[in-house]
Length: 135
Figure (tube, rainbow, N blue to C red):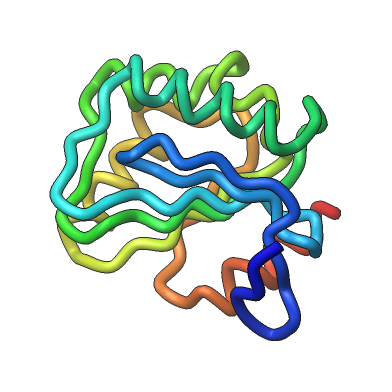
């Protein structure tokens, strides 16, 4: 286990190279993505499988921390919004860090219409507070 913040530890972790997936001790799944990367549908499927592995197949709230200048292609957005792509997700909080990510995130919410509650955040604390309402 590795301490990360405020007495939160990682219980399980998988590093995919372009993203790391963790089960936090508070029950929230965490996805950290690398900077400067365009995510594909295939990579999104691998992230979903990693979520299932670290969560023991149980759907949980998910905090996605977007890497700087990273985005997702059309196939990744379609898959990520689908019931299959969200099968281990109770709710998605996406922590963004740029206006470009806000624009893409709003497009994703309006066009792809994720099948689970999904919100964009610029504050990690606000994102975690919202996710904890799904525990």
